[in-house]
Length: 156
Image (cartoon, rainbow, N blue to C red; front, top):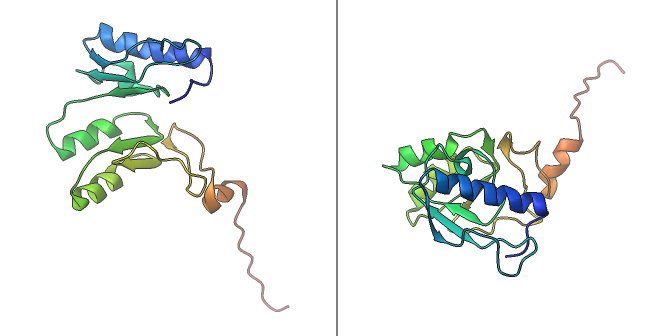
């Protein structure tokens, strides 16, 4: 892990963690600026997270893993999609049927299955909903910069 992009990003992560704690979440790991100082923030795991917390409704963009309880597959998909954002979703599963069902049902531009490392220059990167305005990277990123035009000619 490296530093966050700027001081404002560190403050946002602190705000999201503080909001979660004030509303009943618990810190299992981390939860504060790293001892290295600067723009480093400790990898953080939160439990007891609810929909009412900022980590559930805003993009944190920091090393925070909020853990939510759910009843079943349908419930977790509904919870994950209940946001105006959709940059990326991550989940862990062994059953390939479940992997495909959940990955297709998640309303996100990128889905990481059994990994948190999802970025590569050869894959399209970008979100849906209020997370981004298209894709970058790969041949699909070019599509946002071109207009397709159909020209029909006859009798030339």
